[in-house]
Each structure stands twice: as C-alpha cells, then as structure tokens.
Image (cartoon, rainbow, N blue to C red; front, side):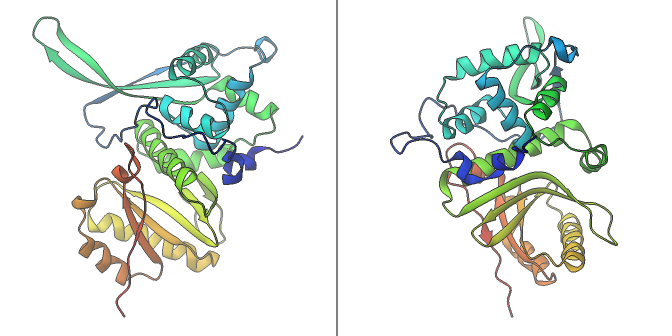
Length: 303
C-alpha cells in the first residue's frame, strides 16, 4: 500500500488555495494560546470501540480531518478550518463542528474540553470553557492505516508520552506546534516540510524526542518549549541537544519557545547560548496567535 503520510508534512501539499482566497479572513475566529494549566479542568469525549466491519466509510471531509490530525496531532476547530482552506476545502465553522460531533460519536476523533470553574452567587460553581481540541480517535487510527498513513510504534509512543508530565500539557504543546506550523505555511515561502513528535534513535544515546522540526530552504529548525523560564531548564535543553548533534552530526538551529518574551530576558538567553556549541534562536508563543505575524529571533554569539 502506498504511504501517503509524508505528503501531509510538505508545504507544497498545502499550496492548493487560489490566489484570490485569503486564508486569514474575518470569519475565522482567532486562536488563543493557553499557558497555565493550574486550575484547568479537562474532559474527554469519545465514542465506543466498534468492530472494523461496522465502521461507516468516512466522507472526504472526514478523511481530510483524520489526515490532518495524524500529521499535526492536536487541532482546534479554528485551526482545522484554516488547514482545510489551504487544501482548497472552504467550509464554515458550524459545518466543521457538525462533522466533528459525528466523528466523536464514531470514535474517529477524540474531543478534549478545557475549562475553569468560577463562582456564581446564584447557582454556585460553574464551568467556563476556554479551549476545545481534537485528536485522532481509536477508530480513526484504523482508518488512517487503511489510507496508508503510518502510525507510531509502541516504542515511539512510550517515548512521546514519557516526555510530558500529563496528557493536558502534551495536547496544549501540540496545539502550539500546530499554530507555529500554520503560521509558517501561510507566510514563509521558503518552508519545505515539518514534523511533530518525532523520536530519533541514535547510537550511544537514549531515544531523542524532538517536539517540532521545520525545514526552511537549506536550514533545519528544532523547536523546544521552555516551560518555566529558569536558567537550569534552558541549560538542560541545550545540553541534551549538544549531545545529540555531537553523536548524530546533524546541524540545526534550536528555537527556544517562551511563554512570553518579557518573562525571559534576552541577556539571559545570550549568556546561556554563549556557552553552547549550537545555534540558538527564540520566539514566544503569543507571536503566533491572534493574527500576529510570528517569527524567530536569532541569538548572535559574541566572539
């Protein structure tokens, strides 16, 4: 069976919309980042496991959604709408929600609703939804395999899940990677391909987990999320990638993704990068949301 997995990671595969179409339109609701998980509740919705023979053959929209989720891991309705537009499929948010509701019922996708509780003087405690994300469901993986899309081995899944302290952090991080990929697809002409949640097995090293890789022209950029902003965390990240590049011989720029740029002074980033042997750049999560242009900022080493 032909492996179609790789084409969903190529920029050229998304260059399908006509020049007259503006994929950043006013009818697309802006995505918003979610940094702090403390006090956030997460509920999962999924249908029941079905016999493969009982699964209804998905339509073209369902197949596109499964393919996008397999490649990008976690997406909001807004993100799905924009990725589908780049594939030439322009449908409204209401229609996408209706399709997803049916797919959740059939366990083709899983729905994760993040909310916060607040006090209401009349009715007591209430929940306020702040984000809704989707990922591939159990039956969706079966359909993906039938489509020729590669799925992760148990060994790779173990390494990926071991990287995050809980599923919510994993989902929210992949949500951010999807937004960064989206921004590059829309505005970076030199982009070639991307990869999310990659695991590399290198001799003499424990498996190396690489959250996001983006190839632009002849340069490779590896993105790593800096969760706390403390020097020790950044130093640990640099040490891990210096060891990886020493053993693998791979050349890349490490992009540190900060929650907010002002929380981590440029001076601190430069001081840490001076001690390292790899190229460093940085960006902040908010750079890529709510209509911002997005971009990375290189750290020049002082000779």
